[in-house]
Length: 97
Image (cartoon, rainbow, N blue to C red; front, side, top):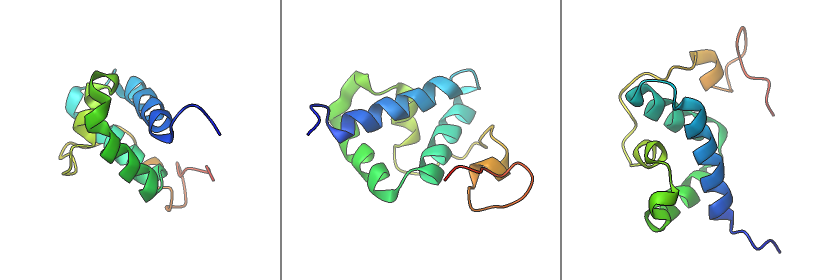
């Protein structure tokens, strides 16, 4: 069994996503983080992260905290629509998984 909790791994991944989006305007970054996590993580992973965020304090990037705060962000994600939705096929679609 790993000494690192699954919640800590999820937080590390979410913070890495936030690092990628940090160069975008803040509202777009928040939307991009939210949409990436919802599109590519399992519902169980999302739930675990949301439940653990309050105890994570400042270990959680502020952009992650905002992105996972409940309501879906209203800003448009800076990532093209085809890459935001892995279920779409065609030009620009993700081939992950």
